[in-house]
Amino acid sequence: MDIILLERIEKLGTIGDVVTVKDGYARNFLLPNKKALRANEANKKVFEANRERLEQENAEKRGEAETAGGKIDGVEIVLIRASSNAGQLYGSVSVRDIVNGLEEKGHSVDKKQVILGAPIKTIGMFDVTVALHPEVHVTVKANVARSDDEAELQSQGVDVIAQLFADEQKEIEEASGDNTRDPELEPGEIPADMLEDATAEKIAEEAQEEAAADTAEEAPAPAAEDAAPAEEAATEDDKSED
Image (cartoon, rainbow, N blue to C red; front, side, top):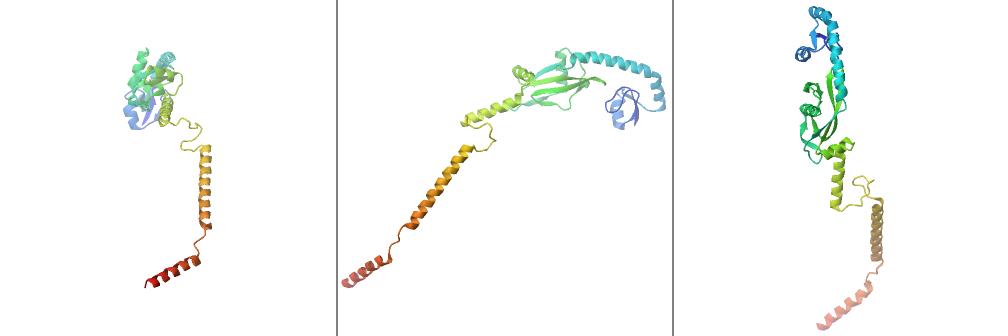
């Protein structure tokens, strides 16, 4: 469908541009929200007759948005939420939560102006875009934490999730009594000194086994001649008994 834009639409054009969009996008969003007109001859004449007024109104709205944006841009809102030890939220942070957080800071925005690609599901610092006007976008920071102390750490640039993981690893090592592991080793890697000791021990064992085998081979076997007289003596004794 061909339409006439009544305001700047990202990736489409600016006010007065005639563009082609999918029918569903035009019918379900652009036309009902008065962001565009069908590009027929009648509407083109209406637009041209009102272009100057529309452009002036747009400029005024843009100026108001820029003024409001100067106050909101960079604002940090703290959202305290429960989460697992891995930082996964029991629930999520939505657009409404962002709007409520800004209102608590004294900034009124419409939920349609908050651009959140997907709900926030972990603790951390997140940049959220607020479109105050088609040509004025600002960024606010959502500080999602389990406590005010954690929120303060995140404000200072601390990666709380990484710290949680490091603390958990430390607890595991302390519980297992392994406090001497070289931090430069990869998981499962054997220290060089232990490897050398194990190798030396194996070599010593093999040397002992070889020595024992050599000793067994050198031991003299019973002589066949010594066994023969004993057998003859036994035969004579048997005859005398007869």
